[in-house]
Image (cartoon, rainbow over all chains, first blue to last red; front, side, top):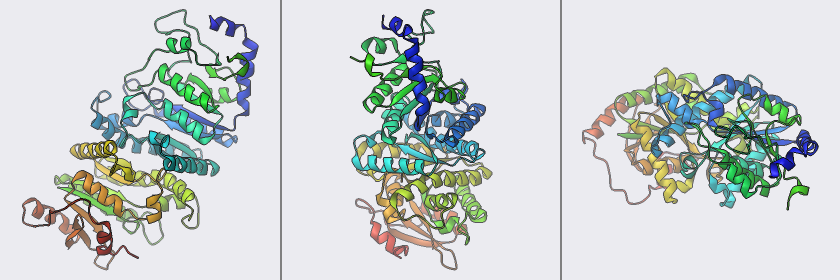
Length: 282
Length: 224
């Protein structure tokens, strides 16, 4: 199996990770499960830590863009919903309430680190509508050049497909391409991409480096997800494919401790790296 | 009774070009009070670019579109935060809605935006609406929220639009789409909604197609 060959390629794997120290512009995507407790309420400590780490990375000279989910969960908490609503209009209403709250909390935490942030809400038509794409691209580049961290989410009020199908993974991949980032970091609730579902298969091993998205890889990434998040490994693979086309590297790592971002950018093996290393591609 | 408030910079800012806590508190009080009466309020608010400009430490509002979009992305955060702070005092939940003009023509967008706004109203939440400046350019050029006010009115079938005037009496102009209903002070606003509800105040309900933006602008003296 391909995974065994990778195990023999330890030195190469470490070398691939080490190259991440050269990143100048990164996109970090955090999902609902990384920001909230299992009951759906916000984990403020986690958000504070994440803001601190991201502000530190930005200060070190690496331009940072954050793609954050969590608006619906925040809205549900605010209105006292017990679980994620199933009705679409409710989801959109909660997103509109929760986004306002979410961005306010981020601003508070970033402000404590003297880091300016901005809110950018995007819909998937940035892919097909040229004017929208140029505008979104210009706004992002302008914010980045002004040393501001853009905090991006989907504009759930007017879009439906994103709410229904799988989290912000693909949005973050498009943002990485749009902004010309070298690296997308997908913060997950598990340690990376496994050779099998780690909850079912005790033999499951983390895959430290991926060169190419194969059918075998896609098969191993069967959907996972908690009550409030909708993303699983399948959406992360799909996001990685978008990044591959844009020559953006991808890391899937465990978001439970945001300090892992520093490890990744220090070149330490910290999950799964989609390196697109050429000598291993067909 | 659905009411759209068009909030302009003068309604929010003091002479020092900063948020005036007194003015914003007054606005929040009026809107929260109307909500408590059973009316449903939506707010289309300017101010994001001005707040972003101040926050970024620029001497004046940037003239380039990209810089304006960046200022709007920074300032929108601040704007919503300010509203949320003052509405919290009156125990009123608010939501943020950023729209682009394609909600008019794109049927899916149209339906989604309408559903979201209506659901928020049903749940007693005030929507704070603005143009999604990060992805659209047209309205920054217009630098005016009138089209957006009319879009929101049309999407939700709102009964009344409230626009502030800045005459010495500080009258509110009340519109049924582009037809002026009457002038009123903030204190009279609730009476007017009662009159409309009871059918005492007859207004022209005959609206064919989209409200007339130019006419509306002229009547509110926005053609400076």
